[in-house]
Picture (cartoon, rainbow, N blue to C red):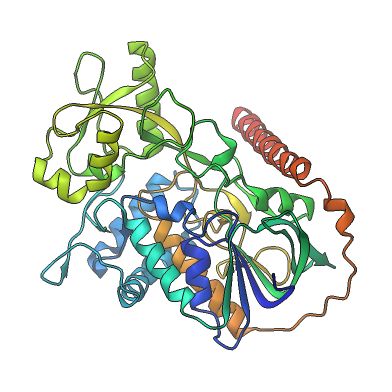
Length: 433
């Protein structure tokens, strides 16, 4: 494990990888992955990635994003994301991402909350396609070292300046890694929840560490529940049934086989409707029918969903499947500005770890990959444009990290308590109004 880097990136998902690809090639970069490098939530994204199709689509796209976010979005961030979308897509195509196309013309699909089709996709595994291509590009760089099974357990700080991180290697060895710049790309917090579409090792560590060091957070109680995940009585991560399935015509049914809702409502609204129907039916799930979608399209557009459901005993071409809402995405996080800078010097945050205000109170479908890449690219450019070396001679007392499991448990409790505190504070403020 290297103990010094120019730039340390904590997280190996799409945001962290894209950031690394846009940093200067003469800088020594170290990327940490808490688990296997492929086990980031970016790999799990099924539906797709949004793009501004034309200037005529701008107002509609902007309004769809704002409406889904209950108009709590930062307008400047939304504008930047939309205006930057085509450049990101062009980048991804250069990295080899194979978006669905018809003889070279990109094909668009539609999901809940969108007023028109504007989502690019690769079958029902867009996140895997994008992230694996980015990883391949990163692995070809001589100036980047990727460290799997290496966990950030603290930041190195001095006078509100980040000087790197304290990390635990796979065998439990704790080492300080000093860096001029640190980028937090640690993902969300789904591992804190019983029902989640996230990998269980993604537990919001960066949030707890940020709280410890007085780094500003924003909207930490804004947590999105996805309305359709495959129901199972077994414990473990829930399998996502992509929003694009409903975008292509799938319908939600109650226990009597009757359609009960507009399936393309924004996720938070649809989730409430599903919960209401489950209560009415006294059932732990509702059913999703793909009958309106031609069988050939199901097998071609949604091969992974089709196969996974078969493994669970359901043939989606013949019968409805049981679905239930589950924790899916985190709209809040570590506050960042338009260049992904946190309130601590030399420290950036990108992807689901950060809160740049794009999503507001509720994320519009398929904006997550785009937002992550746009603002990861901006972080890289800002670091490159303002690169400053820092000196870190502070002694690190590694004895305080002797009980790693206890520290991890404390971090989980800290984040959950802060979410409850923020939620209670928001509810009191709403009642006062």
